[in-house]
Length: 232
Image 1 (cartoon, rainbow, N blue to C red):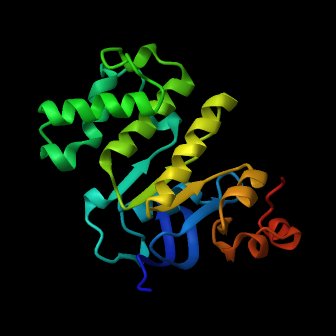
Image 2: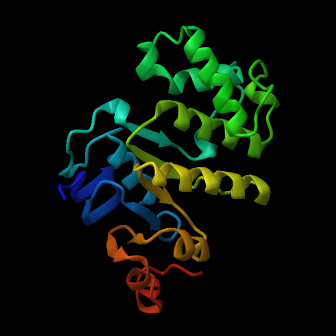
């Protein structure tokens, strides 16, 4: 099987701060990968490099036959400005941009799809509501809806289950399973090691560099976790 992404990051800096070094891995279609490691270890930087938000200072991230619309990236909720004057339907419309050409003007078919997505993520009847009125769990449901709308081949989720209630976590985990069953490639930054072991067959342990990558049971060993200074 041909690789979907070849990662060869020798170094990445933010100014004088080294965020990531010596990170080499290959990602294949339909992989389901958890990225784990200590806080400040470069996990979110790796996700942004995979998403193509910027290029590594030294090295490369080669995406094979992936167009921008083929990649759906969900950032951490702390990076979202909830005061921005957006309605719930506006956020879903952003995910539909490959179909609408970026104008966000929805025809009858797109409007029906938008309402169906809101129903599937548990936000039926919320279309006209401001995002500032949503709880943390509802906001994350909304952003999962935007990912669903994009219908992408590669889905990148940065700490998707942090700080939300367990029923919402369970519903969102179910959506991730559905996406993977549809043949999509899933990569998620996670802190819950028990969830990673249960749900993700592959893992990348990152602590400013790639400590280990491969089958989850072989990556998340006590020795590797100690090397990464990742306390679980």
